[in-house]
Length: 430
Image (cartoon, rainbow, N blue to C red; front, top):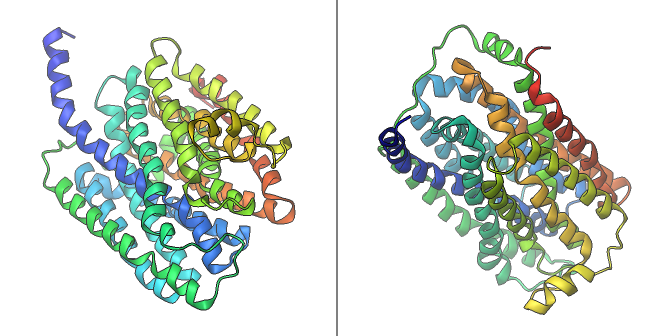
């Protein structure tokens, strides 16, 4: 490719990448609010660890039912309209939190989470192929990493905004038994922020629909969805990639969204911001990925390193004393930070291990799919359902043992990621 052609491609990609970057930020903000919402509702509605995990389950399980239909919608209306429709679903979900907060009916919160997950699935299915296909395949992990920084950067911001707008208005201790009036007050605190978020997402949906975002070439709608799925799954690297995404999202959500609930159980007052710690580590991991892939290490190698780090951190979390604060005393307190148990900081450090997995698996799994790209993308997005089952198993194990032991469910997940990095992505036939 000539210098002029490369320059033209860079210029033509700039505006679409800016628009897509905004969408990744919105995805991250809405997604990582769950890390604050989960312990908040646990305190307000007096939930068990298993019941609290259903808040995440209902959000991520929507992927299972809507990923393949999302691919069909995209083939019918195009990628850009699909993005706008996905945000429309997210806007509806934001408004559903109003009756949920007013009635304090747990099932309504779960339904709102389900609708939010469905809207995000459509948006995810449309927006991820943009990042993979808008430039050279060998640097796709770098582009996805840049989008990931925005997504996880939103994850840093969301808990802070949640705490500032909602939790800061209430000074009830984590061990306080709330009265009916206090419960009403805390629940109603969700109304205005979610109205604001819904309106903002709705405006952004209209902006995207009428934007100059170019349409990716439509794929031929040949055959029914089941045949396309079978044809796509005939590619082992894709099928195993779906499993890798499933177990990755399981550990990502456990690390980011249960850390606040674990902090609540340890008596940490500012539990709602704990997700930000995990997200900061994920942003650091993305930056390292941008700097090193593919210049110094390949995507599979980065994936392998991530898996090994995940195993080592998980083993340490399981055995460390939850009263120890050595890490925060050395790293945070001298800088004016909070004194936190080492176990919480190690869970946050899992963000570093998790960061590169998503951007590395996507290009490896979609390589060579051609006209099956949207179906392959939908199947990979279905892997996000791991976010439903990972916390669920963590909640079940936490209920029968302890929250600390609950983190053992991550070990087999990281071991499979290691397998995919070492062998699974190379398989071209079963």
